[in-house]
Amino acid sequence: MKKRERFSQIRLSDSQKEKLNAEIKAFYLDERGEEIGMIEQMQLMELFEQKMAPIIYNRALDDARKWFSQMMDHLDSEYYSLYRNED
Image (cartoon, rainbow, N blue to C red; front, side, top):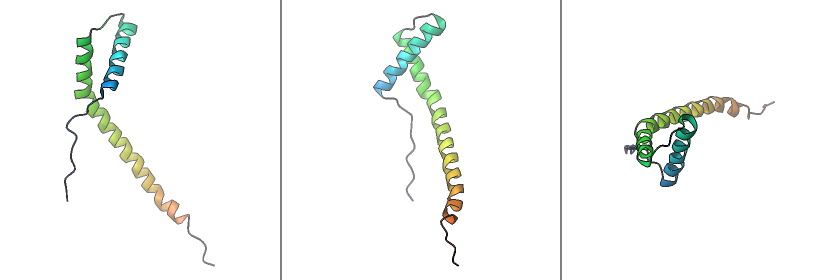
């Protein structure tokens, strides 16, 4: 059996990074009344990619597994609901 390839690191696209950088800049301005420089924005993005993204990714996997498990639990009842009386 072939081993599955594991993701080494979650990477954001350039457009996603641009959007999140704008969000970071707006957050600092709105919440703290401070301007944040491009270097600080990039450092925060790197922190999010390295530390937060794997946590969020794993949580999404757990949520998907829970949803799939619930669907499989309902499969038996759905299957037997298709049976017809044999009278």
